[in-house]
Image (cartoon, rainbow, N blue to C red; front, side, top):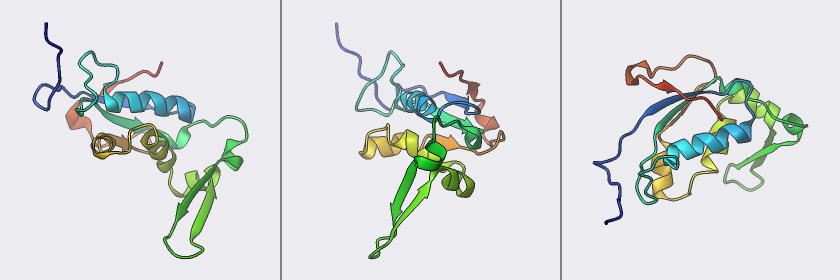
Length: 143
């Protein structure tokens, strides 16, 4: 018996909609990352992009536990001397409501060319509206 190896022609991608309202950020990110990678499929092949497309709505209504709204820091650098910038989670949510979800999911996907391709299948929206109705997404209930 031969081992099944998925390839680009045999992969079936499904579109999922995930509602992030009231869900803890880490809990949401782990399940979305697994969907993007295709880890729950019986045809999962580590070296092939066999994951699904995921639409996350209500990203501005995620939940953080403890004092993370004030204590959790997001850093970036402008590439100039002294260009390190730091924002806490509350400030980042006010400026870019989708970025916390994008960064959390991105950190759970491999940082290589395959991971870059899988990250492109994530669509995050701050509100409940999205423009992917033509793809007929299926609602995904978080576990």
